[in-house]
Length: 120
Image (cartoon, rainbow, N blue to C red; front, side):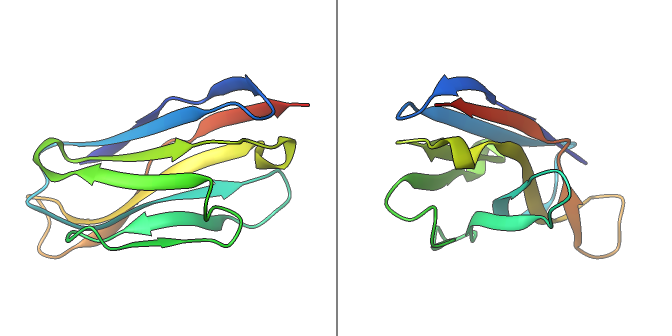
């Protein structure tokens, strides 16, 4: 199983981007999916996460601007980011708690990261 993130890029302040993350390899079950971000020299921080039932949790900075959603049929999680600010510039990583068919139990997986750059 791998997580493939996409959708990052360069946007002006106030603009929007939509990130996508696909879990490939036919995971048997996906519990939590989420997005984290990390700036150089900083710790990785939670942006938003969503459970299998659709209950979402957001970091304070993401509330009212970002929306996380998931398509369980497509094993995909999305992050719609609106009203972007220069301080949102970061590498964004998707994250999932899932069961790989080749493994005896669930594990945590990370995507490769996608760069979001917000210009002022």
